[in-house]
Image (cartoon, rainbow, N blue to C red; front, side, top):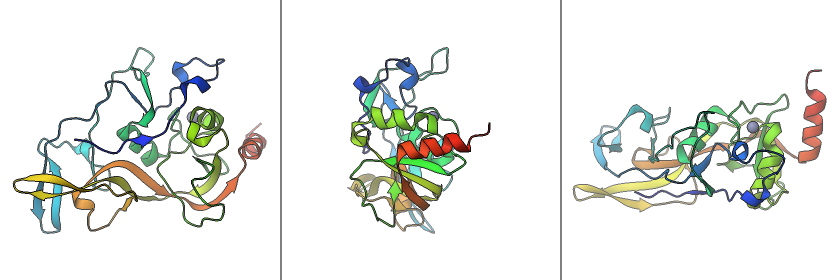
Length: 236
Ligand SMILES: [Zn+2]
C-alpha cells in the first residue's frame, strides 16, 4: 500500500544548538522504520453505496467522522516518552498529523495550540495569495513557543512563513487515495491533489492520509508582532 507522504522538509541543520536535538524533532515527523502496514483492503456494498474496509479492521482505523485511514506503524517511545528512530525530516506521520489536526494541538510538542488570540497556522510564503478568502491547510497548528522553531526547521517556510491567526478552523476533509473495485479486489482510482470534503459521495471508498481544516475568521499577521502581542496578553 502506498499513500502520499506529506512534504514537510524539516531541515536538521537549522536546529538551534542551544536546544537538545531530540526535543526539537516535531511530534508529527515520521521516523525511520515507521512504514505503511500491509494492504488488505476490500470494498463491500452498503445501502449507502460501496465502502472501503480493512479485512482486520480496528476501530482506530477510522477517524471520528468514519473515514478510513492509511495505516502506518509507530515506533516505540524511549524512557522520556519520546518517539524513537531517525527523523525522516521530509515526511509527516499520517496518524500523528491526524491526531494533531483533530485535537488542535501543536505539531511540535502536542500541547494545546489555542492562544488567547486564536490558533497559529503557518504556510509557505507563496502557498496562498495575500487576499485569498478560503484557506485549506494540512499543516497542524503550532503553539507560540514553537512557531519560530517550526518556521526555521522547515525550508518550505523559508524562515519567512505566512502566519495565519484563526479564530476557528473547522474540519474540512481529507487528502488521500480513491479506491474502486477490480475483479474480487480493489484498485487505486485516483490520488487527487485537492482534499475530499467530508460528506462527499466518494468518501466511503477513500483512504485518508492527511486531515485538512479550513481557516475561518482568520487574518494574516507578522510572526514577530504576533508573538509580541501574545507576550503582552499573557497573564502577569
Ligand atoms: Zn509547541
